[in-house]
Figure 1 (cartoon, helix red, strand yellow):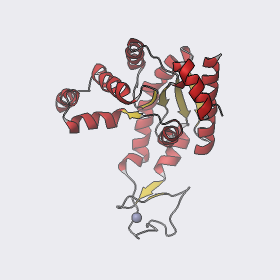
Figure 2: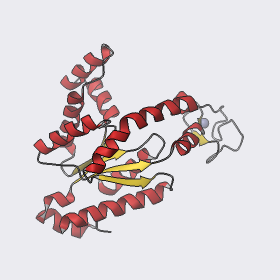
Figure 3: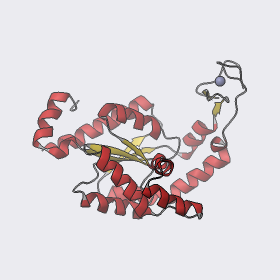
Figure 4: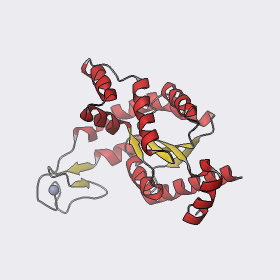
Length: 239
Ligand SMILES: [Zn+2]
């Protein structure tokens, strides 16, 4: 792999951009984005910027941006793109000088354009948008089979069943399905995903930034393919 330390050190001195991995994660719920994000964080020490968490953090800490966001949310309005981008940029400036992994934003082509402009103002740009694909059938099968007990132990009726059907192996508590994992809810989330995110995929494809991965493969396989892709992106940059 091209990421061994001595090489990174040499490139790091000569070409700053080579050490920068400015990444966006895209994909439907249930495609395995969270798992891949964890692995990428471990591999490259990239700060993970999940916009849902970021919004919550700002509100809890009562920052100026958080108070501004809260005023929209209290009125039942969406937090404007500009405000979310300011939070993201602040996070990137604080923690992401060598790269970042952005999840949950942008969700539309308009937001993607706004993010591209904001990054350009910092003299930076995206390295790639990583799309982890999974068809609706796969997503529904994965998510609707999840079960948990009230202590948060997780199972899957098909892929990781408990020894006694309907009961937790660890504490014997009954297992239940979260509302988020009900088939009707999943179908709604998928419909929203297709409607809003497909134009975004086109946006990154046109700009040569999109890289597709088959989320039906094992998490380990997807992870290796992502690593190989990032290695070749860095190699191309070095030529
Ligand atoms: Zn349990």
